[in-house]
Image (cartoon, rainbow, N blue to C red; front, top):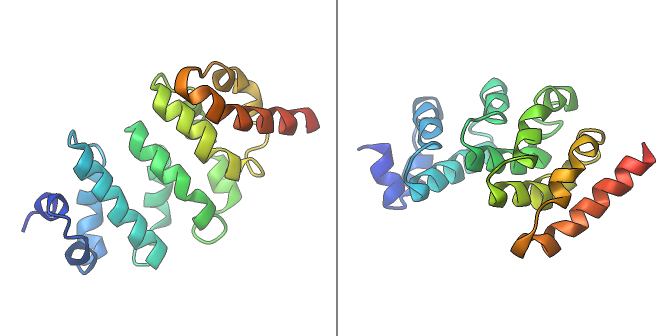
Length: 163
């Protein structure tokens, strides 16, 4: 049965019972799907595999930190606090920090706001200097996101002033 069909039908349990080595490459391809539901379901399966330890391919995970689709990349970066020092090291994370920087400067306001609000704060202790050079992208977020993101901007300013 086609993996995409299982995702559309919400049969996550059936997918999780499959051999990760056989399905992870296809799940990764689906992270760029035009169907947002399929894209999201693919990530949920990958995330659960990582959290359960059935997917522990460090190189593949590191490549996902720079995944071309910003929405999917954002989700991968949100998982970093759970895998840091278990699956990946701080050095490996820092070597891919430019990929997070791109999210923090994204033209997609929703991705940019979520990256500043949700993704960056738990990683500030590792990525101290990176957001300092691009704080203006945080400060430029307006509209419905402004109030939500302002706390993150203030936290980054504080870290930057300590350096």
